[in-house]
Length: 164
Image 1 (spheres, one colour):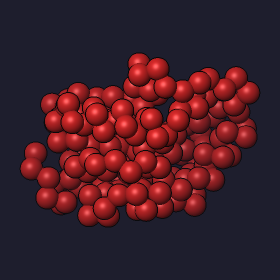
Image 2 (cartoon, helix red, strand yellow):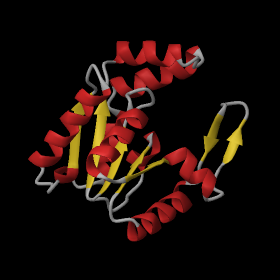
Image 3 (spheres, rainbow, N blue to C red):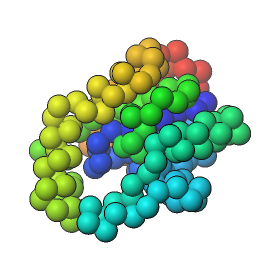
Image 4 (spheres, rainbow, N blue to C red):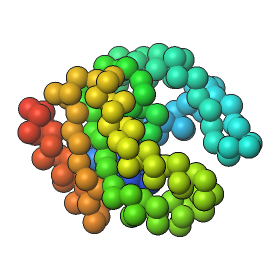
């Protein structure tokens, strides 16, 4: 099964995807590490982030999906692409919780504000619904633990008809 896990920075994508990979016996990829391994993107010193060319990135992920039949790839940019996964998991978080998580990570006040705003206006959800079949989207609220969130995803996948 090929699964995309997306959502705003700080919702728990990376931690939950690792747990999900173990539960489903899938290899797990992080979008930033994957892009760097493929030689994609340039570091923007001013914004302190990797700028990834989305077209090339999408082509590399599609090649990955052809090669790996059991893969989870996670990242916040994935909602903006049009890929062909089996399912898309959209993780949500309460904006106040998200704000405290991002502050704890040392994000600048501007970056915290931008990401909390994006969560508040459903940025990732709107893009995911625009780019993917709604019948393949599993939207869940981040739980109190990685295990709780992962279990919610498994239930959501089963509700969508996934054979796990």
